[in-house]
Length: 152
Length: 152
DNA sequence: GCAGATTGTTAGCCTTGTCTAACTTTATGC
DNA sequence: GCATAAAGTTAGACAAGGCTAACAATCTGC
Image (cartoon, rainbow over all chains, first blue to last red):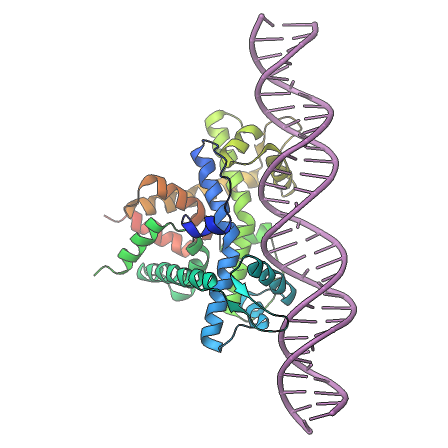
């Protein structure tokens, strides 16, 4: 989701014109970092709904490797930001916006993953690296990754 | 610095055995995220010392695109963590450890950048993406990137 | 249909990373 | 050599993202 519209929609900043291209790059990286966690959650929630039928906090906690209260707090934030809906003691649902974001993330994740695999990387390392890289790849780079992975 | 020893040295965690490979991947990503800023600073400080002769907080603030107090607080943390030394109202110096980290980051950054360029990306986008990606690339992936960028 | 296990929530704490406002120190120009 | 500008620091606020401890709700198996 880096360098594309969605992150700016979620965390729209005044973008202070520092007139330093380096500074701008770091602003972009920081903006991306702010949305990484939300994207990871939304992607995971979509996956859980697909594979388990529902997304329960306990499963999110296990998959994310964090504690239940951390999940609760994060889910509250996602709900506040309009990505999910939830009711006390119930499982989690994605909003339209959340679904769109999840789809986008999944798409991005798959391209990065296929690209790394096509480079000859083992699948375990590819999966780990894709998890970190996917949030920092611009549309332009993603297009090149996709083209490379699909080369004859 | 992702997936290598340094991050664990800086932020050594008990690594709770969740027995979920997904969770482990996220733990790795979170560990990498914690060190990204320190790496960015150290890399920048090394660069400033090289090009300007010294690393002054005001220049760090400009290049990073943050305010002076933010720089001050971050530098205090870097000093606490043994990466830099500093005295009040004076410029910043890297410790041995800081220099080693800076060298490593620079190496990593250059490989990622050259790789993106060799893929056909324009230099501005390549620079921006490299800034975000470099912290999330394992040794194994880095080796593949280097090999690809050096192919005949 | 209730006891105990599982799941979820709340409260409260900590660190990081950002900011603004206000102050101090150092550097600079006459 | 002093006034002012520039640089640096300190104090204090705030949000995010993590934790533990303690409590509440739900589910499950007799």
